Structure formats: structure tokens, C-alpha cells
Amino acid sequence: MERLARLKEVLRAAKAHPLYQEKLSGVDPEGFTLEDLPSLPLTTREEWVAFLKENPRPPEGASLMHLTPSPLMGWMPEYLSPDDLRYQAEALAVHYQRLGLVGKKVLVAFSYHVFAGGWLFHEALLRAGNLVFPHGPGEASRIAEIGQVYGFDVLVTNPSFALKVGQAGGRFPLLLAGGEPFTSVPGFRERVEAALGGVALDAYGTSELGIVAGEGLEKEGLWEIPEMAVLEVLDPETLRPVPDGEKGELVVTALSRTLMPMVRFRTGDLAVAERRGGLTLLPRGVFGRTDAMVKVKGVKLYPTELGPILAGFGLDPKGFQVVVERKLEGTDKLVLRLKAERVPPGLMEAVQRATGLKVDEVELVQEIQGPLVEDHRF
Image 1 (cartoon, rainbow, N blue to C red):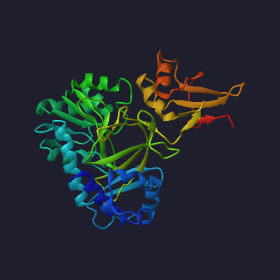
Image 2 (tube, rainbow, N blue to C red):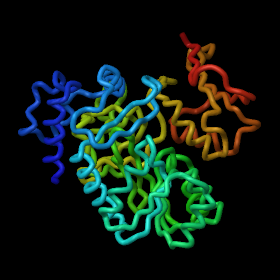
Image 3 (cartoon, rainbow, N blue to C red):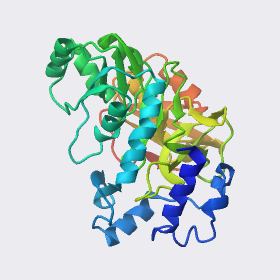
Image 4 (cartoon, rainbow, N blue to C red):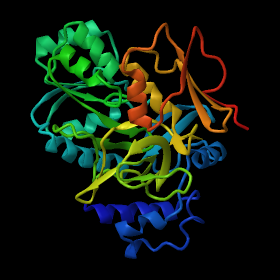
């Protein structure tokens, strides 16, 4: 289905959904264009959680259900209709065919239980014309052996497990990775590719959205999958589009969801956008969260952006704390508290390149206590 036609279908479904009836009351899907999308209200996960708490039972027309852990409600359910499933499989199949995934043997090592996991890939890879083995999670050595015995071409799993498969002797010409920070972690892709002896490509998706962005073989970053979603990157304060090359919050309108419409859904994920040829490219992937943003020296600092950088230097990606103080002359002082024995060479330069901020002081500690950000200026 053509992209705009599918967007109109999603909007028609959203207008009939209790969560959106008031929000979209003045919207006419028939005369809608892609350029009109930024005029629509944003939707948050908190809004969906509130609705699902009041309406916990599966809606009429649901044919597949997943659960995702949620700190707000324990488990957050996601429901798909038969049309959603058909559309998702066909749309993603087109994406995989563009990658040359036709006639391949694919082993999926994501879970097929409770979480969306393997289901997000399975049907699309089948429709693209591949043999698919729904292995699910298991021992890395077993997957390495199966891959060799049956000559699998493609491994689908999260990158940290793929690394274990490679270390266990597994060799796959192609890895389709997702589920955790990957290309945003310096050096991670190179380690995984060396272990597997092939090419590793990143993807971004969530249970409620589906897979909405993926890399091409050029490895330029995560491209918006035009059949699956419309991506925007907004300033989390002004909620306006950020200029190309600036950081902001990833906002997604999913084209594969009509039973649980996701219209301008605020993911809370941090990304940099570039617009090319009518599509959105995320050249650095998704590399943090916008929730704990703090302004230091007049610059917006997203502390979770530091996690992938630390991981690239062999440090605990959660073993840090940002402390902001006021110098005697009144200017801001940025302190990075690290759970580490030493500061790896090049780390501070990498932090400055990524954030635009120079760290004034590093404190090495045995344990990190307290919140992610301590702001002592006020």
C-alpha cells in the first residue's frame, strides 16, 4: 500500500479509538498529507498506560498479543489485528528484499514467548522469500553448531548474544541486530563482525511500534523504513523539529498499527536526524534517553548518551553519575563521577565530541549512589 494511503487508514482507525477521539476530532484523514503530520498532537506512553489500566482486556479484533515489562504498570500489552499482522509482514518484507534477503537461510534467536521479539522479524523474512528457523534463545554454542551444520546465512538476535555466538565458533555472513544499543557503542560493531566473520546491521523498533528503522549495507545509520513509519526528531522542550545534525527526541507514527494506533508517539529515545530524499536518517542510531536532560553551560546534556560511550571504552555503561556545580565565579562546573579504576585514554575527548561539553573534573569511585544527575546549582 502507498505510504500516504496507509497513513490515512491509520488516522481513520485512530479517530475511532477512545484514546484519540478528542485529540483528532478536527482531523479529516481524507484530505490529509504527510506534511500535515506535525500539526497533530503528540502521544505519550503514559497516556497509553492510563488507558490500558482502565481497559486491560484484549480489544475486539485482536489476533496477536505481546507483553512488555513496564515500570508504570508491570506489563504493558500490545495488540495487533489480522490486518496489522499482514501489513507488517508485507511492509518489512519489502525492506528485507531491498537488503538482498531473498532465498537465504535465517536463524532467529530472539524470544518467541511473551515479548514481541522474534515475531517482529519472522513473518516478514518468510514473505521476503527466505527459509526461517525460529530457534528462539538458547546456548551460543548450540546456535554456532546449528549454523555450521545447516549452512545458515543470517543470524537475527541482539548484538551482545551474537558476540557470544561468534566466540563459540559461530560464523554468519550477515547479522540483523536489534534490542539493545549497538552501532551507537564505539567499536561494538567491529568486535561483533570480527567474531562472526560477516556484516552486522542495526535496526530500531519497539513492541508497540514494530521495526521502524534499519541500516542498509552502506552502514550510514538507521534509515526510516518508509512502509513502516514516519519518523520525526523533536526538541523535547519546544516540541519543534530539530535542525539536521542536532539531538532530540525520536517521535514515531507507526504505519503498521491500527488496532493500537501509535500517532506521533514520543519514544523518549535520543537521536540525531538528517533528512535525505524525503526520508529521515538517524546517522548515530539511537543512543540515549531524553528523560534526564539537564542544561550545563547553556548546552543541553542528555546523560544517558554517555552510557554507550563508556561501553566503547570497556567501562560499565551504567557506572557513572553527572554532577553539576557552580564555580566561585558563578559559571557551571561539570563533574563526571565514574565507577572505574582509571580514566581510559581518549574517553574525555570522546565525551566532548559527543556532547559538546568539556568535563571539568573526573571523580573515580568504587560505587555509584544516588540519581543519575546531581544538580547542586540551585
